[in-house]
Image 1: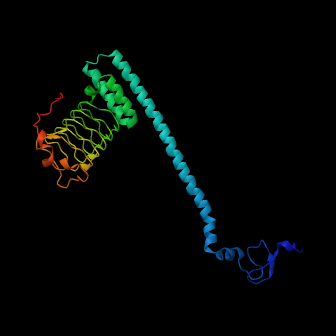
Image 2 (image 1 turned 90 degrees about the horizontal axis):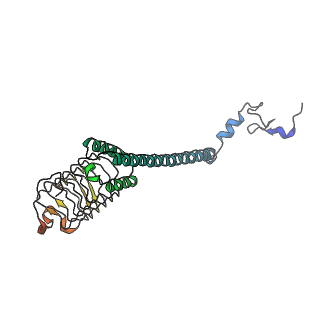
Length: 283
C-alpha cells in the first residue's frame, strides 16, 4: 500500500523516505525525536519552561495576596466584633454592678487586659475613650500587665500607670502628657513620636526603649530612672527635672538629640528637684 505523499519525508540522517510521524528510521535505525530535541538551541529549551514557570509564580503571588487580604478582612471583622462585645458587656456591668466592689473591678480589669491584648491600636483608641468616659482608666491601669499590647496613637493623658508593665508595648504616637508612670516598666517599648510632656517617670524602666522623636519635655526623671540602651534620635528633653540618679549606657546613642540634654549633666539644672519616693497616689 502506497502511503500518502504528505505523510512521507526524508530521514534527516540517511535521507531515505520514511513516515513523517515515525520516531525511528526503518533504514538507519536512528531515533528521530531524540536527535531533534537534542538539536534545539538553549533559547528554545528556555521557551518551553519560562511561560509555564511565570504563570505558576504569578498564580502563587496572586493566591498569596488574596489569602492575606482575606485574612486581614477576617481579622478586622473579628476585632470589630470583639470590641463591640466588650463595650456591650462593660456597659451592662457599669449599669448593673457596684463599681466600689473589688471583685467587680477585678473582673473589669481582667476582661479589659484580655481585650486590649487582642485589639489593634485603632480599636484600642476606642476602648480607651470608653474607659475614660466611664472614669475607669486610673482604676484599671494601675499595676496592669500590658506587655506587647498595641497602644499606638492612644490618648492616655493624665492617666496613672503606676507600676504597670508595658514592656515591648507599642506606644508610638501615644499621648501620655501629664501621666503618672512612676515605677512603670517600659523596657524595649516603642515610644517613638509619643508625647510625655510633664509626665512623672520616676524610677521607670525605659531601658532599650525607642525614644525616636519623643517629647520628654518637663518630665520628671528621678529615683534612678533607667535609660540604659535607649534609642535617642531627635528626642526632646528641655526642662526635664532630675536628681542626678539617671542610669545611662556608656555607649548611648544620642545622635540628633537636642543640645540641652544629651547627657545627664546638661539636663536643665535650673529645674533640679529632688522627688519623693513613688507612691500609688499621683503627686
